[in-house]
Length: 630
Picture 1 (cartoon, rainbow, N blue to C red):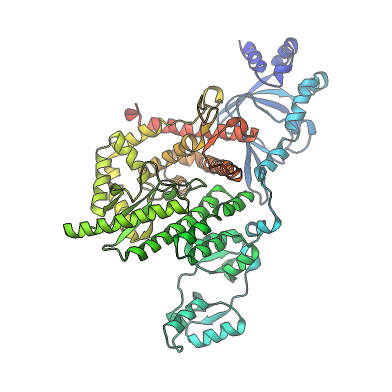
Picture 2 (cartoon, helix red, strand yellow):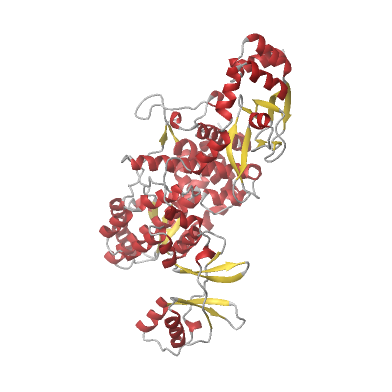
């Protein structure tokens, strides 16, 4: 029975299916079977060559290669019917990759002598391996670096140049230096900033030419000391971090100067001007353009350049998490600028308020295709008249913001989850009532409504209103575990599009025939699972990668599959952005539908393993909430 099972297996999988019946039986007699527990290193890069060709009967393996810096990168996954070990067996050279069991794995093993005899006697067998595997490592490695996007050397500098390489010498002054003395030093040295040292000779703050201009504008006494006007918060970057990392921080903290630290000591300083000289088209210059605009029409012209910035990031194979971070910071700036223009138009609000975003915007995971998901929380009022005045003001404000964002390029939410909808602009007490009702009376409709709101984050206004709402509903969830059970029941029903024998499940007809929705069936199930685990653990973070990082030590399932989950999320987001960018270049609106036949072999294998991982996580959710899953 074991021999018949082996023959049946070989008949279904290349290159053995190319052999005639007698040879196939002879091969089956020569097979041995090996079992590798999950995480077993089967072959190690730079180790001895393989002594056999292994074909996976059950389970899967991941193929890793050391990149520059000694970091292992996953270049392939192989599943049932796939083989490995041929290249080093033939070359008798060091093993070129590391092969690790991704699951408990069983392999059929065919020894070197038998493989060599088959190569000599069966040309089809030899041709299969030579054509499909000999150059496999080099081909996949090149594919990982970038597909068809060409880029110039100057574009690369922002990503490859260490911050320490462009840092200028730091000029420092004691904290008791006068403003006049500081201005004289800056004029003499022809610099735009000074680092201020405290009595212990430790950097305590920074003073810039902008600070001095404000001093003059406010007619301040030039004999005042620099310590009284300096910026105390010193944002820093390590000398080994890329200039791209510096750009990210400058955008996030709205600063134009940053100190560079090397081995714990002050190395130098870099400015936004330095970074713009390094690369003419950069996210930093884009953000500066946003800050200069005063009308919605001006913002329309600036936002049109957004796709160019993202294209540059994709060209460098920047991690998806970094790209979405840049997109988020830029979109936040656009949104805040729109709100500032709105406030100038309608005057000061009658009560403090907080403008919040949620969904992909709240998770900081926006791509090219972005619609509006926002709301307003405003402070509780003391009278019906004050409530009416607040509603009137925020109604006009929210409609203006919605229409302006549409004009800039952010489509309206089809489900109307926007502040322009009266339902989603309410005083804090009403928002608390919403969450209390959702959590304590978890009907399917209530759970669906609440899902995206758990990704909310504040963007403008009084952030404490949003924070207070979060502090209100987190303890409620802890007391009402049944709510999480109802949430689990909903999210496990959205399974990834992978069917029997890991075939893709695609649309059978209509506009998207032979395609599947990568966002709906890939990104969303993963987001939903990680959100559920985060709410279980009382984690308030919203970004999926941040949540995975926080869950690594707090949730057993995430602890076991932490690296795989990070890789899966990065891959799905990067694949989605690449395909959307290709659509934009072809002047088509970006979508989330993908035809698996248009994926490369590497992408197909990787996405199958990603979907398999998501299914496994959904299985974990089912086990945890078994009584409530129907």
